[in-house]
Image 1 (tube, rainbow, N blue to C red):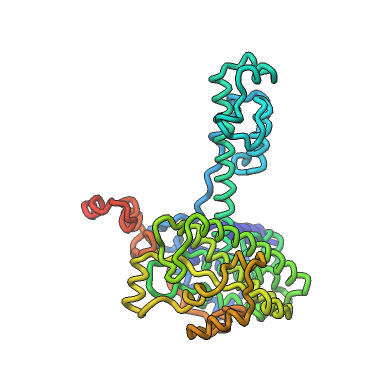
Image 2: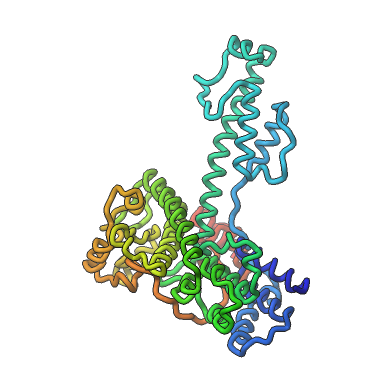
Length: 456
C-alpha cells in the first residue's frame, strides 16, 4: 500500500474518536481516492465535491469555533505528583498512568501500605491511627501533621479515582450513543478495504454532529454522501468488510452478509452495553426521579447524564433489535422488549413544541406507561412485546415504524447540508462570531448577557 494511502487511512481511523466536521472527513475521503488513483462514479464524485466545498481546507478562514474532540476527563496527574513527593515507595509511573484507573488504584494501595491504611478506609475519625497505633506499625517518628497530610491525600485520591471512572464511563457512553461501536474498530479491520474505511468514517462523523436547538427533528445521519459511498460497497461486495460496516450501519442488507458468529459477537457486545447504560440511567433516576409524563427537566435532575445515557440506550437498543431479527431470535422480544428512553427536555423547548406542534411527542406517553428499562433487564418487571404494542395502540403510535417492537426502518438519504457553527445549540453563520459569542456567554443562561450586548 502506498505511504500516502496508508497515511490517509490512519488519519481517517483517528477521526473515529474525534469530532471532526463531516466536511473535513469527506475531504480526507476525497484525498484517499485521489491518492489511490481511483476512478469515481459520477454520483460519488458529485457528492464528495459538494461536501468538500465547505471543508476547512477550502474555506478562506480555515477555522471552526467548535472543539474537534470530545471533552476528555481530567486525569489524576496533579494528585500523583503530590503523592510521589510524600511517599517514598512510589516508583516511576508509565506515561498515561494518570488516566488509567488501574494504575491510580495501585498507587493508592502502595502508598497506603506506608501508613498502614487500607483501600476504602476514608473515615477521618475512625480509620486514622493515633500516636500509639502509629508507633506500633513503625510510624512513631512521623508527626501527626505529616500523617494526616498523607491520609487526607489518599482519601482525595480515592474520590478522584471514583470521579475519573464515572467520567470515563460517561465519555464511552456519549461516543457510543452517537457513533455506535465505530471507535472500537481496530485499524487492521478498518483499513482492510478503503471503501469500507471511507463509509464508516463519514457516517461516524455524521453521527458525532452536535444537536441543534430546534422544535423539529435533528439532522439525519444518512445523507447523500453516505449513500454514494455505500453504493461503492454494493458495487464490490466481495471486497467490503461488512463486519466493520455493521458496527455503525446495522441494516438488514448489511447484517445478512455477516456470519452467525459475527452476528452473535455483536449481539453479545450490545447486550453487555445495554446493561451498563441501564445502570447509568438508574443512577440518574435514583438521584432525582424524573417527571415521566412530560420528561421536562426539573431542579435536581442530572439532565446531562440522563440524555447521554438515553441516546446511548436507544442506539444500543436499535442495534440489538436488528441483530435479533437477523438471527431469527425475535421470540426473545415476546418475553423481553424494553422500550425506548426519551431525552429530558428544557421547559422552554417543551413550550415551543406545544405552541408549534400541539403537544408532547406520542412516544413520551408510551414510555410513561412501560416499566423502567433497568427493571426489565433485571427481570424485576415484565415487558413483553404485547405490552409495548398495547401501549402504542392507546396513543396512536405505529410500533413497527416507530421502532418500538423491531429495528429501525431503513433510512432514506437526505440532502447534504453544511455543518453549522453552534453556540449552546444555536446556529451561528460565522465561526469567528460564534467564538466571540461563546466567550461572552451568549445563550448560556449564566448572566453574561450585559457583557454580550456591550460587545455586540
